[in-house]
View 1: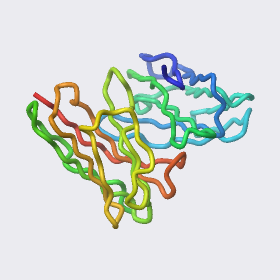
View 2: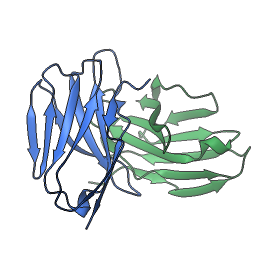
View 3: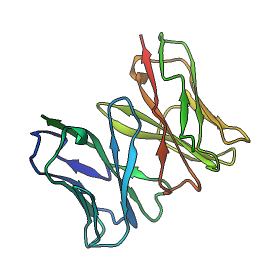
View 4: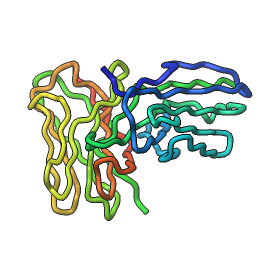
Length: 111
Length: 113
């Protein structure tokens, strides 16, 4: 059983569309990180959210941490082919001693 | 500053052989974590080393082992390779480890035939 479930698992969209990726858990996390992994590379940190209800924007990407700190979402506006990759959320929480990674969402944006 | 360097990037082995992968962390980072990534299982935690000591271990058989040197460089070894060990092995470093933000290397892609 995965502590962090992401949905959808796969997403294939056209350039210009909007999308939202969800990261859900029954556990409370002290903070949540989002990474993007491009083909042939390791994951790269996009953002860290630490406060329940927090919203962070990174250009066309908007990250939100749930009020109860059990879930998070990533919204991409006007997706571009450069957004293609595997999106991973990772939670940090009391007693975990390490980051817990989500199941991943693979995004393909076609021109 | 230089990123996390993993070598080799690609390797092919046969069943029963063993393999050693190397990871050089970012300067000043004392923690090195190893992950196995496969299409079916996602990112699975192998182990974490901090100041030459294994601090945390995932749920992998004893065939998977690692070590860290005094300069923080780390190696992981897989003995008696099985077909199911084919995967991308990712190394990540951080200053303090644990739940700290990770900087990943590009990975070592292992194919077992």
